[in-house]
Image (cartoon, rainbow, N blue to C red; front, top):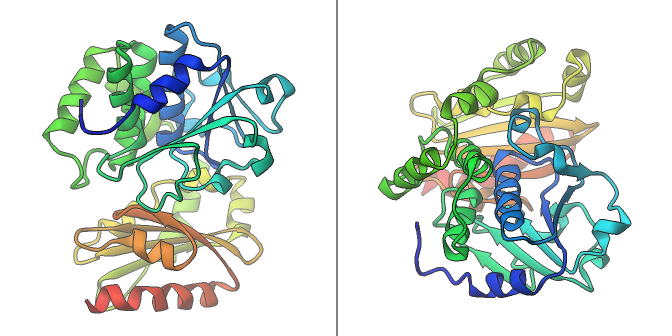
Length: 326
């Protein structure tokens, strides 16, 4: 167990009383939210619970190897899923990130499990703790409290969540307890070779055409402390790719010596930009993203901004001033 002082009892009580449980991930899901969703699904199914998974968006291709990923439906909520009396949201910092109308949750208990400090505590029951390296690690602790042993499905899902949200165990939030958890996941059936191949070695060839454009845009500012990359929407159209195909591009910017903050700005549609931040200690990009209407945690955060690329960059530079001058 990573953190024994977290109160999971309200979650456990709600799970025991529920007739049907709907586990939901945030829009544009990543491996942490999908891994958390799947791990919880496997655990609750093993307890004999009636549980379904439904998201607004499809799972990313790097997660397609995970057991039961095909059980996740997406799109409009079917009536049989809408009948659920308990909804568990994983890794979503706000209700809006779930991509569903607020009215959907009115007659349900909503459990909010997340590790982002910027979480708005929107649930009927909230377990939010920024000490965790990933929401998947929170699910690991919940399974311990539920006395549900790991199986190949849950262990593989949590491993994918933790592997990706810690930048392959490179962040300072990775301590000895995290590595002990990983050992437990491997003992439980997680295949680290399959995970590495599926997540890092199964990219589409066109991704590297997109990467060339991203690296061409690379520039460094603020006396070498901030690295920027950007991609316009027409480049995604030209390569027949989407946002998930550029996951990880920001790590090239963060890997530069002397860079404290990396910024990746990609255009989702005309003059609507998804901004991702990555940081090295002691910078806190969660604060920067919060100033711009987004959220996240210290080393990884994001927001959505509107305008031309130059206008968006100016907004970001203004938000960075205080941190870079401190």
